[in-house]
Image (tube, rainbow, N blue to C red):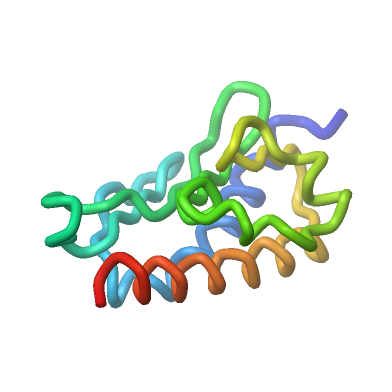
Length: 122
């Protein structure tokens, strides 16, 4: 099992997936162990909508992506390898950097961002 010493590298890799969206979203938390983004204020829901975050936890690093909870069809076609990292409906847990899976997660995040902006803010 990878040591927890790898968690900061995992966190930074996952954070880098989210950082491009910070220009259009709201950074709610940016620390050494949490990076959290909310969407803009939604007239439809009368609040800011949670978009995504990454957190260093005790046994893994979590990546939460709310659009996959809101739009279940986004998960169609994800690889079995990425699916194995899912816990619950919108959380992916990692213990080491997995470049191929992080690239797939990056594409999923992009699709989720585009869908959320189109359906919740247009």
